[in-house]
Image 1 (cartoon, one colour):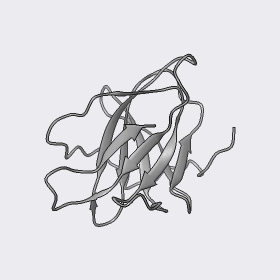
Image 2: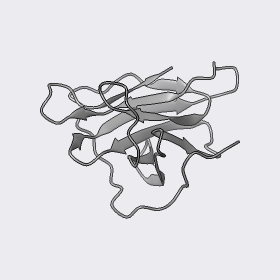
Image 3: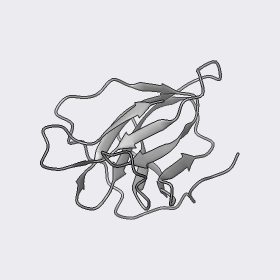
Image 4: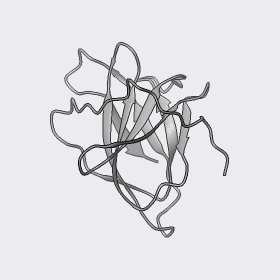
Length: 126
């Protein structure tokens, strides 16, 4: 498997949840995807952090590449939170369940939104 962005510890990666209501958990086989803006344009250099669902312990961080792509390698099955941040935009907090290989190959698409809108940034599985 090819890693789109290097995994590295980023000290400022902190858990944050600005969702008004918690979104539904997304089912994925692997944890990779893309960070985009409202118009669908790639968002390079977005900080994407992976946290455990229980206790919200930081498990790793990556930075999206020039096409907005990111990937976490060797993620065990289980429940997680993906928190994406872009300076000046509302952070995304996406609950995900990494499951078995029978799930369709889908990617996490995180759409970043300005802070002044009624809803915050969000993720979908496509």
